[in-house]
Image 1 (cartoon, rainbow, N blue to C red):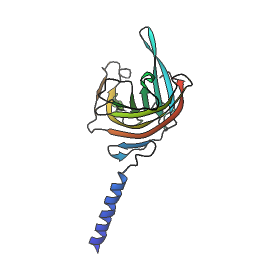
Image 2: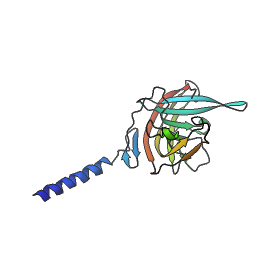
Image 3: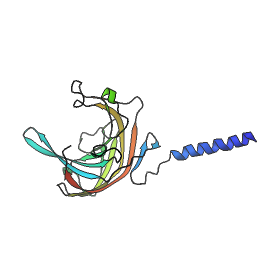
Image 4: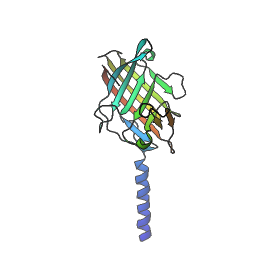
Length: 201
C-alpha cells in the first residue's frame, strides 16, 4: 500500500513540476527566464525623447520604457525599447538580432535585484548580447513631444551580463562579462500605447 501511495505522489509531483514550467506566451507581458516563468510588476509604458549632444550637433534618442513598479520611484529600472524613428515603417514587423550592424533597435532590461554592488557591476539583459533578438511592430509613431507611439514587442530574447560602469567606478575601465550560468530572458507581447515626453536620463 505504501508503494502505491509513493508512486501516486511521485506522479503528482512530476505533473506539478511539468505544469510549473509551462508559460502561456500568448498572454500580454509574458516572461520566461531560463525556461521558467518570470514575473515582474510593471507600470504603464512611457515614451521618452532625450536630447544627446554629439560635438556641435544635437540628436534625439527615442525609447519606450516599461518601468518596474516596486521600489522604483524614478522610473529608471525596467524594460527599455530603443529605436530610430527614421527606420520605422508603421504596420510592419521589424526584426533585429544581436549580430546585426544596425544598433538602433534593441531592448534592454535593468532589474532591481541581481547586481554585484560590492564589485560595482550592474546586471543588464539585452537583445544585443549573445544570441539575443527582438521582433516589434509599431502601429502609430509620431516622433515628437506629445506625439503618440503605439505598438507591441511581439517577442524578444535577452541575455544577461554584468556591466562595470565607468561613471560608477571612474578609476576602473568599463567592461562587461557574462554570468557563470547563462541568463536567458524571453519576453512576449509587450503592448504599448503612450505619448512622448522629454527625458533627462
